[in-house]
Length: 272
Length: 321
Image 1 (cartoon, rainbow over the protein chains, first blue to last red):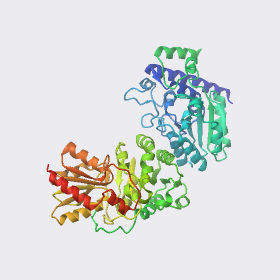
Image 2 (cartoon, rainbow over the protein chains, first blue to last red):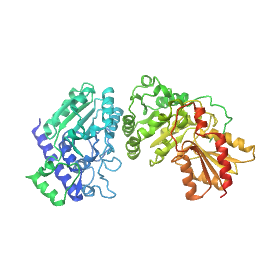
Image 3 (cartoon, each protein chain N blue to C red):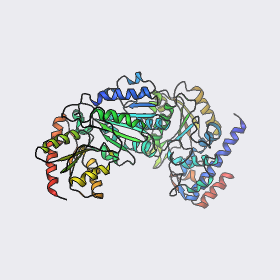
């Protein structure tokens, strides 16, 4: 791949992590683990893959992005602010009363958010609906699913339907960090072989290291070129809290306290 | 504009006959109109629609939650979705999906819940939605119709096309009593006074409108003058019309084919108690589960009858304000 693009995506991922940590530090807590595990994908999408226009968030020909794991909001807000969808000063208002940046993604509040999510499983179906409604257009609908979220039956209802309708411009990602709120995905509800499950429903499947921007980029290209009329899923092996050692090592890191000082120290680690 | 055409005779058409015709017309005229059903197309008269309207009609199978999400996503892309399933699945089964993916997200979906209340008849208590009105009333901005007859169903299907937001239409599928003249028109948030009276007001919705009109005729023979109001939309509720009538009569009875808790009766009671405390009695399901049987049996069993309305009218008139 283009070495320059790879470097840009990597740099953007780092910038996203730093920006998100500043948001969390400002607030003192948040969904840190699952934001950092999905950061590299968000960087690849917004720096390398997606078509969008910050001056016209509703641009008809844009690619759509639905984070069905709505709690990854802060990572996406970081990308949207850095790309100019809204002022960087908004980032300091995360979760404050009256904010445009709520804990979970809300299309009625945040420019650049394509769908309101937060009740797990629902973003999956809405993304499918968006893809089906725009079959004659040439953009893609990207869908981010959490691994814990895949406990929801609605995800598999969507999986059945997307395959049945041959929705080939829907590309889903599973943020497989192996942790959900109450413990590991294996302890809480072991889902077995997730990739095989999607394949059994008729999806084009790939597994990649979700922190390797080049692998992610290539997987998306591959999905576009080889789906043969099927929806695609890219199961990303990730680490919850990726990029900051102490957060990675925190067992329950779905929602954590994070002081301003801890955030600053974490940012130093990222910059090291 | 509407006209009372009630004669206690069945409508010439059933809602099940109206649905495919009107929906088919809407889809033909506007390619953005889409229709999703969860394996109940043959029950509502739209069998064959998937082949007839490719890219517009979708039978998504037995998966209501995903169906609502798909409809919400389609609406976000400018489509105008109509969704149908039986009432219990259109309300309690997919409540969170309707709440979040449609209403909270400000998407635009019309949901038709068929076989409300006792009209579920042979499908029995498991399929008998007495609670759907209460559930939808609790969703901000939801619009709720309780369909009276085939004419109203046809007009509501048409007028809801250009309304943006969440619309819930509960409708019987089979034989209904004709209430409205064929040329009647309806407005969201505007109640219809079907019969004027001075002694008591009956606010009735859905299949209970015809029952209320029958009771009103029987009461007229006893020189009791009854005003009968169809709210048309239970939400938003036409408070002005209801209050004006209550001011005139001083006594109100509500009648609904649903649980009296959270339904039309509570909506009317709330408006009255906040603005014009008025004696009130509620005819409806008295906080019970449904059961199986013919619709005629169930109407008697759950006291959705002219006699019960008459009892409640006499009770409420004796209370005095």
